Length: 392
Image (cartoon, rainbow, N blue to C red; front, side, top):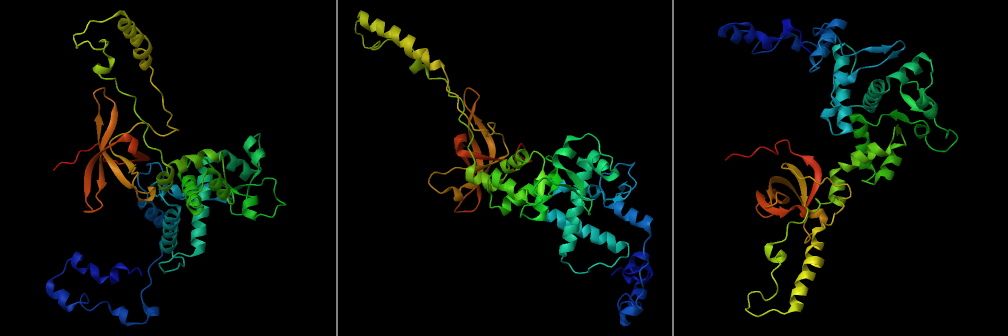
């Protein structure tokens, strides 16, 4: 409960008073109104709209000075909350956590406005559904401003997206796609899914959540699960992009770094010295012909280098990369995760091995070992301290 300043005895030392006054004052015994019934407790004054806007603006970080408030009205008859200015979705890697934080923020907003809110720590299902709807409206208003404006004002113009997907606004203000499967037996949400953009962090969180719930199936299985509620533009590309960064899938299907180009052969394999040149024997004509044939058919043929396909795997290893250490003696489920500490270059300047930091199974302490890059599977995760050397 919020205690008014004039009754808050915890502020007495900060306001300035003697030690004797503290001993004889309510600071040791508590305020007198606590001994009364709760109906007789002092009531906190409700803040007005301006004070609420000031309180909300304090939660916004790095806001442009020209921005006067966090909650705006985009169009007449279409009120929406600009939640992206209060909660930064890029700080969250889980959609569930993002929705819970957003729900707590709006509970706080209602409380400072004097509205009745649930005082329990747990969130209700209605609060989470409301947070989801607010985020969907925010994403659609930022990514589809023209479509939203046309649907609100009912001034439909030539737009292939509106016609092709049969877009409309539902009773909650979200853009949905009608499609042509109204008479099918699937759910109503699948018949009219919510429209989402291909490039937005909120969309990526939805893809990752459905990918996890589908037990890390492939692109097709994840996309089918998503389309039960959402319609993502160019759906395969964003799903493929998110699945490429899935750590669990990388442990199952990750490819190691490709083999570097083969180094130059040593001099003893490319020298044109004839056979038995150091035996002291005299040579005959056929041996000279063999030397010419060796130069022509063997020495010149090894100039060609075979090119290997890496199947789309990132072929550049860098310090700070988080990798999986391939170990043929154990199952892939028990392969360890390591961090690339140093790259080792050969005489020709090509990286063929690296020093990695990995946890020792016996001592449970990190150790530095050297492994070829063919045994390192990248996770497409890079430590922000990868280029910084640890000083002892």
